[in-house]
Amino acid sequence: MEFRQLEYFIAVVETGSISAASRKVYVAQPALTRQMRLLEEDVGTQLLYRHARGIRPTVAGQALYSEATRMLDERSDIKARLLALGSGQTGKLSLGVTVTHLWVPGVAKLMGGYRGRFPHVALDVFPLLSGPQLDRLQQGTLDVGILYLDDHAQSDIEARLLQHDHLILAVPTTSTWVQMPPKKLAELADAEFVWGYRSISPVYYDRVVAHFSRFNFEPRVVQYGADNITILSMVAAGLGLAIVPAASRSHPMPGIHFIELDELTACDMPLWLAWRAGNVSPVLDNFIQMATEGF
Image 1: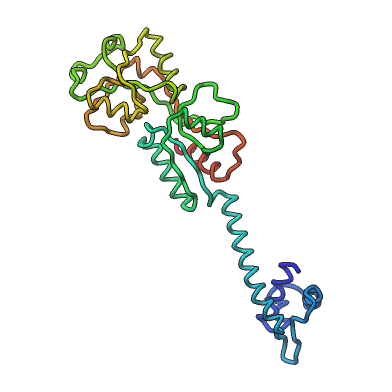
Image 2: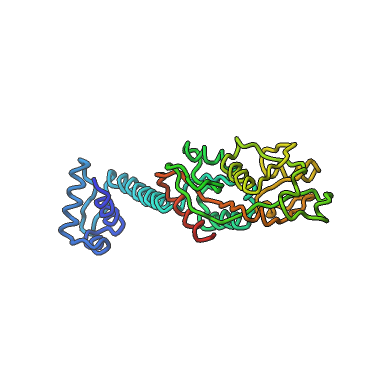
């Protein structure tokens, strides 16, 4: 029994004649008659009753008509769903974004645009620092991440540059630095800083420290925060100063004043889109394409 034979059989039942069915399915009458005979031989019982005014289904034929109609509808539904999956129209995508960049206009536009273009894809967004993102990408528990990478990414990770960022100084609005902003990092030698742990984002941490070494600057750290949002909240509370990515300005926080320094602007902080090499996923491919077009 073939789907093609079922389509022919349905046409015969609905039109009530071989000649009318042959015109409907574009098959010659002898060939259509033969296919109906083969179908009856296959199921082992008579399906069609021939009479002077045409053809009508037997009891078995009526049952087959109902089942055949359901099967063909299900086949069409399966084909549509597989096509949607294969083209990335449906599915699931897990996205990691550094906490700092959740409010960056380009990232917000990318997430909103992807959701608008592919409304049937479940987009799970996880606010994660670069280190945990990289770990989860390598473990295969995250599909794609927006994060900081070094210049020599791991061989099992593929990446595309999204944009360049730099560093900026964050001070409490009550700080004297607001009225008399520093021009050089050396002026901050005695200032107290809030900092992040290297273990939670090694690539970011090492890049910043390497840049500071060019100016013989080492911040005097008195407090630690888990991520940049936490660090900025501590700055707003007056616990110290912080040096953070300039993208942090996209998430305005009361009590914070940002200061540009040439020596901080010179620190290139490239933001990357990264995914595990060999991750064959249409929903991922669509996201990568949109990210490439949007940044």
